[in-house]
Structure formats: structure tokens, C-alpha cells
Image (tube, rainbow, N blue to C red):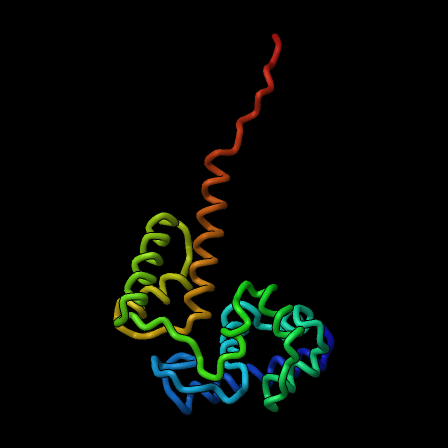
Length: 181
């Protein structure tokens, strides 16, 4: 990573911390559906949870890091093709990325309750593994606080990956070598 990219990332982290101090609680929201200060608040949330560097989202959208900074800071727009590429690589629909309001998992709705139960079940299956992000998200949902969809999605992916690794390790075939005496 070159110095410019590093400084840009540091600037985004400072903006995130400023937003936290001004609005209280965890960034990017406290359970309200307030839009972030960008055209792509869900992209900003995804970067906060899973893509902390500009290089990956810029590479996924096939734009330069400077353009990605302008998109996030100066309300520049991505083209439809760039949004399609980015959505494909992130595994999310384009409508989610282009939505003007940040998406939340609200634990008071039926869908939010189902997502909370699903996350709790995954966490139970991954018992014994250190998965603090998923525990934080589940704790927030259990306390009745909304969490960003990006944080929920990241927690589910982290748990699914950990469960997969655990299952592969348990089913690893043992050596079939026989020693001859």
C-alpha cells in the first residue's frame, strides 16, 4: 500500500470516529435509519465491517482508489456497471449498495427476530471458537438494539467460515499408511 492510500484510509477512519463522537454509540448508526454522509451508506458500512482498505472495493468496482475516495467523501456516483461489479464481489444486490438509507437489522421485527435466532444457532454450532464480532452483534440484537446489515452479514460469514473449518478439521482423513515390520 502506498503512502497516499494509507493517508486516505486514515482520513476515513478519522471521519468514522468523528461520526461516532457526534452521534454517540457505534458507527454507522445507533439503531435509527439516518442516512450516512455519502450516496452509498451501505457501502461505507460494508467497508467498516469487512473491507477496511480502499484497495479492495476500488479493485472490485474496477475504479482507481482516488475515484473510490471521491465516491465515499464527495458524493460522486458509481456507474451501473461499477455498482454491478462491486455488488457481485461483495455478494450483495445493487439495490442494497445504491440505497440512500442505511439498512439495519431491527430485532423488534419478525425478520429481525428470525435473523437473531439464526445468528444464535450459528454461534451455538461454533461453540469453543473465538468469534467476538458475532458475539457483539448477537449481544446488541438481544439487547433490542438494531445493527447494520453489513455487521450482521459479516458476523454470519465469519461464523459460517469458522463452522466449515471446524467440520473439515473433524473429518480430515487419517493417514492410511501402514508400517511394515
